[in-house]
Length: 132
Length: 265
Image (cartoon, rainbow over all chains, first blue to last red; front, side, top):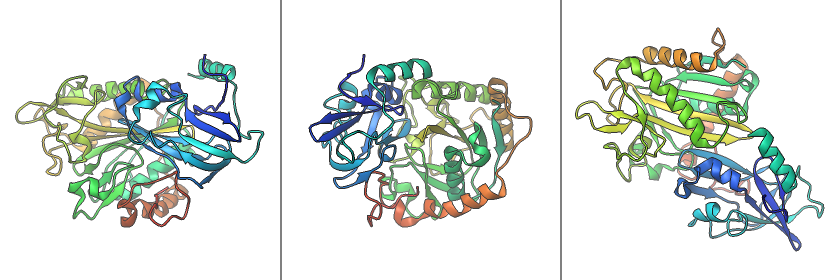
């Protein structure tokens, strides 16, 4: 079971409330789709700088594995406060710990009631089971 | 659902990259799973999505350079065949990890190459004679999923297909490139004529259509881009060949309007 302290998207991002902010990352499923367990296959990740505003569903960055480039989509609307500085030089943390160390960006959400089309952990599990 | 397919059009590289973006977007008839096979006129060099001109020494001095929507290394599109697959990511062809869809495509490519005397296989852990560090060229770096076969001349195992994917908006684009003959800008790679039989673009295109059609079912007739899609591709092509944009790494995560982060999309 994936962590139930956060919400999920059908494009395999997660969003976790943290005080007045939210933290966003991608799921283990997304990582495995890109690199099939070979952590060295992730080669580049483009994340936004602080100050960028994003709408729910909008692309906030891109991630590249040796064989594919994929968009990263914002689960909720808000303003980027920071990007995880560890990711650029240590993409392997996305494979090792996508839920904590592998967070990607922190947002000041536009609304306290998170506005995206979000799934609970159980709903995300069910979505994976039926669609993949 | 049968695949829509078409061969061509014969256009410059930037136009071809723009048209593939529209296939990925699913514009018009391209919403259906689509296979197209094409080549560039004139020849040109495509940069991988995150590459800049400085990453690819071979690009220096070349006039026809464009960014490719898919990642990986640069490819010189001279005597070669390129194909593009575009489909929703839920399509059976694409289900599962990226590695699975690569394996499905490369299995079909190996079958298409067999009539030309080519015994292609996935690289796995084997070392390749075509790997050269620091060139930034797709055919000169490899991964376990690449399709390889003995090259002409010394028969050493070499990379024979340049492949990369792009996922966006619930859809996927897969690019593949096969050399018909040796290319002086990418020496030492495996080519479709490695077994000593001359292989034309038309020969290889027909072989691909035959193999893909038996595996996936193609529509009975080709359906090339209509005038509206062609017009959009022509307009979009300008951004793909913009020299200033080729000198900087595309950044989707940077505020729009930033002076040094122009992106073709």
